[in-house]
Length: 490
Image (cartoon, rainbow, N blue to C red; front, side, top):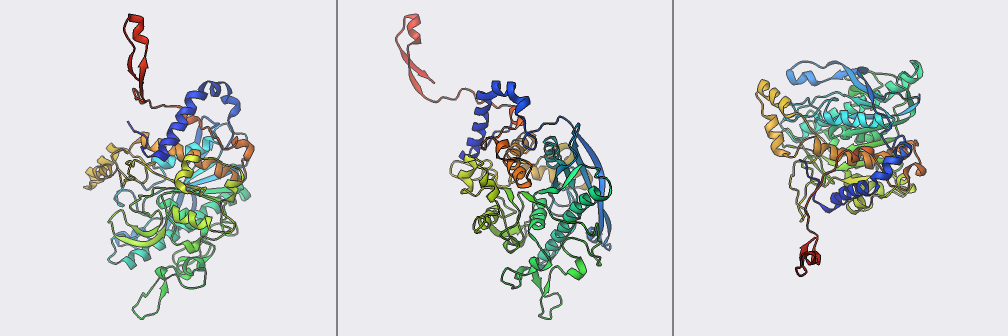
């Protein structure tokens, strides 16, 4: 059985929720039907899924890993909607999977598709809350075993760039469907949010901050960002690692040798970004006035830095590129004259347990999973505790492929399973929901009840720690049997 974290911050959160359950269960049972709020609570029982929806076509370099030329790839998504909904214009929540820009198993791990357990769980939950949600696949492909760090950086930045193009193509697909096809998915094209797990966090962070092509390779002072330039032929002249004439523009609306335009004429804009364990390619991409952001990130993440440091390839352990994780991102946001997340503070959200660990930076949720009392992570590789997978299924693939992914991954994360993952998805849902709702303009301060949140799913199961001694004192109960008072364990 999964035991909730022992660190004080998350322990407080867990105890607070179970205390609320103990004291308010009777009241909630009476008031639950009337107290639920759309976009804060799961008000729908069922979700319908439209699978394998093609949202575009673009060029993938994934065949190059097998010595073949780039080829056109159909870009696919699964769309989730609440059953029985009468609303016809609903906010859109788009979720992007993890996987290190490589397919599962090839990437040395178990994640990497839009049907990952975490992706499905997140999409189903937010659909039950009244959103239209989309699990979005994007183009994969790069070589993490390239011989030099410069080569790995070159390939990874290009992979991330393709992910940005695909994420924006997906936004335009929905807008076009609303404008030209009778809005078959019932979205509000002005209320769009993106979220991503791991690599999907890298994609959505970049998509939410890059304003144009030069924003990628030029810093705020107009100087080249050195790590994104290289000498491609040894002549001493530096070339950007992404070339617009070759790779297309960031929106993916130009036709070039490695880009096919899709849904030209529609906006790629969206209004909110949520990141689970990803990082930003460079802080220069982030600007005052960018959209509100929420980040969940483990300070001990061995692959994606919590601050600003070198990204490490999980597949090989090799260094790739300096990037900035959640702490660095939110420190930057909080340094602006006008905080990009000011809308959170304006409605008075209260999360004292989280504030204790995020230094008051609203929108930052430090994922302090399984720490000892002295602050040492007990599972240093369990930096994405919201992920889980089927051991038997992965073991069967290991048998076919001659790999050892299941055993290796379970060794790195021995507490992996639905209990741990769903506990953390509860935290994500609880913290993100009011912030995303106010950023999109679909809820207000009156809906949030002064910052106190109730999410139905946290009351489905309760873990009981029995026989905890909190003190010792004298009892007179033995007097009923003619004996003297005695010490009693409380």
